[in-house]
Length: 324
Length: 275
Image (cartoon, rainbow over all chains, first blue to last red):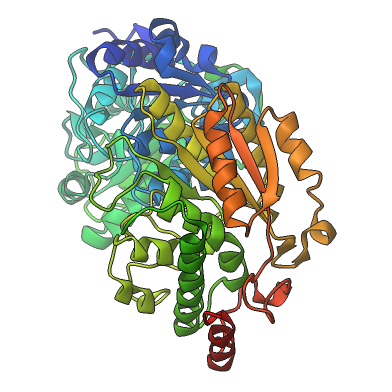
């Protein structure tokens, strides 16, 4: 494991679902004319009889997946995150969730790191849209290794799950044999002054930020909260209680995503300052992924700044901090 | 329950089910009367003659399935399920009431025999396609039936699904359109014209027939014919009358989403009494 190594989450998904296909013959995969981009083409090449390209019709795809599940199959449906969660929201709600169907939605192209395709294709609301969905589980893996663990774990669960993958390559921050469990966050770094709770790409940035903060005498804990729903409320409360200040970080609208979920939890259990880092602007723009993440402050520097804000609001000052 | 191909017997079952629909809706005090009455002859033929189904089958058995895509026709489905023994007929009295197993629109987790939740229109045929694809994968014999409303055909997803059924050659899908000509805001042709319905389905690659949706014999024959079609899905365009069977409801937009009053119920039941 090296922070210099990078891999896109969609590549990891393509490999993971193709591998899983040989383990479970009930797994079927659907895509809406984006199988090359979502990487489900790997599964299609290996199991053409269990792959259904539905054409450019995400709504039809989601309801069809529900029908396959009703008849005993284990469908995994893919598209870009904007289409899977936005275009087909009502189909996900009624055909899948209100029918309690075992459908997995694995959407690529989450967040601003979609890059050049621009605002229409950058999913900054998908976590919010799926979080509010009745009976839906929501997972945002931190890196390619975690994608594999997530896919293997959710395949064993008879419930709908939304998983967000990425177009861009993200640093590998978790071990290759990392484990995933719905409803469980993982402490990646201990620290007593502040807790940074992150998901997806921002987990790597949180680890960088914690390293930089330690140079200032601020000791930040880092939590990978890939399971956004169900949220690990026990861990969130514990971190809030023990550090007295929380920063959340996500590549998503600052509204109603991971930050919203954590704030909802903290305000009712252990009220401490929660600074939410995410996309503040209503929409993004075209550009290179790295440029965009920096432009909108979704990087380690943004987290450092958010930590300073959180600590300034703390009831108990940080005695050993050199500067704030 | 028993299955029958006898037209008179099926007509008698449909008569009883019409009375149950009206009684159930009057008790509920709200609900969709007109579209339940227009669909009940088709549903009667499916549940009491043509479909291989039983309350004792589990979800995975090779059997026929029915998706009520026009979910507001729920009372027609509920009375058929009750008569088939999926739940006690006494439950019909609880339709649309708190803590009932019978929601205003089909909600699958609550109601035995309801395959999927519907009500937000346009989704049922896609779901039926998914069931049919699974059946094809497993070499099952079961058919998937689906009932679509005519107003519902204004939903774009219906046509996405129409393409999918034909593309995947789902000859195990047998669908009906309930063409009663009315939708909640008025006549379909005034709100958003959908004709030519028959030609549209044909153009989308479906084997298509048009029948009188209240002629039991014609429904039986159309299903038998559909089962002989290979390599393409079957659409049975049923010309129906909204509120069919109750003279003062027939062809009246008003009864799309209105339950009969106690007086109207009495009048309707009198009309439906055996001759």
